[in-house]
Image 1: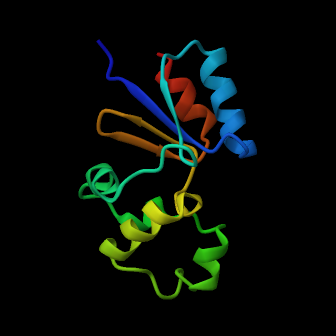
Image 2: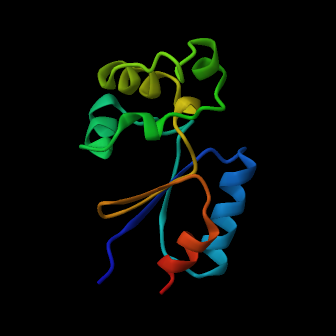
Length: 116
């Protein structure tokens, strides 16, 4: 049995809506989580990131990311987790999680591969 899929989104995000529409079209079963209404806590983010690079989870298009010049001065893992829990728009989205696999952004080919 395939692992449960969780789709982290912001419903007002155009890319999130496009990704979600494809999941529905492909009849892929998933649980959706609205990052505005159900923010990720620091422990949840810590577990989700695991041993991965925390910078992969940061939304480089976010205003806070640009204001703090995070591309030149990346936050520590702990600081990034704290900021993402406080400012969910700082989380790169959509994010699709299946078991240990995490997809950031919308990659149509990767999403279609989930249907196989």
